[in-house]
Length: 425
Image 1 (cartoon, helix red, strand yellow):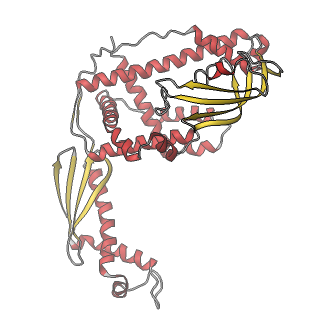
Image 2: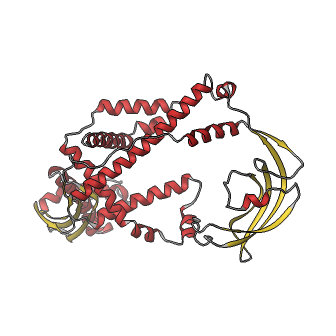
Image 3: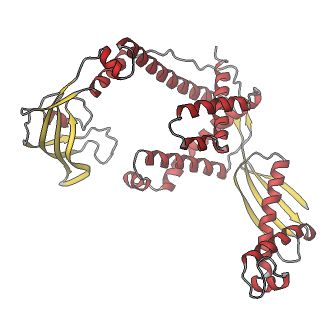
């Protein structure tokens, strides 16, 4: 067997392999057995068809093709393992010669992970910002908890702020109902500002069965661009008015949330908010550190295959995000008036940045001799299993090899980031 390797532009490796006729024999024998087991030939049992008979029925070329594909998969895997080739995606294989009685010659193009020349990652300018708890957020959390215990009372009077109203509405732009612009028995708490700006104010002062037509103008920065800054016609009908009584937060309410008293509940809320803020600050700092190192580092060329693989990964992330929110990716694309290919093309610069970040983390981990042992993985698995002990169906997923590999990457990134932050002065 002859193997030739050529380095191509954009971090790609070309491997040309010539497999001699005698070296192909084991693969041909295997192909003959496989095809013979899958082919019905009168007068012969499956798996026991003589080669000459099989050749006449399926064609010698088909047998050689089956043997060739098997040979390519095995030989390429052996080359990649032996030479420790750090590749991405699937190799692109072309047969240069495949004919009975002749050597098999094939060419494989493999996308390599780009080379990285790290900058001085031990002299970082990034700084961690102090975490300050916003008291308004604490008070808002208290209010949200109180509202969870609010009592509703049906009343026959004009609506006012704080009331919950049940209404029908229609919103039209140029005489046409906008998407999501019609509902019946829609619940709305007046004064919370959770609906279209200007809508709630128009509803204040109306009684049950009252009807009203008015105009609202969508904000200039509204997320749906075709409605941003546009004036629409609105029609509403009030079906019911509920007075909301929000109780005070006391020890009794705290106990209803499984806390000893109000003080313990308040401490837990503060701890949760602090933890959330610290997590966000760590994420911001990690991003700042990685971007700083990227600017200082040099990267080899990125193959199109690598960029494509990353944009595909981002596409799957978007799809899962939309579906988890109860939507459909097809509706999302229709809403933004783009195709999947349009989005993937737009994402290419972001994909390259994500790849660089991953390469930096990986290269720093190697340089700093950072590793994850089996014990660390098992400890993390125990935590996950304990958190989902009431969901036994998750146990199989957590114990899968794919999830363990994910955990190794996750723990490796955490360790690497911790090491990098230790270099901040």
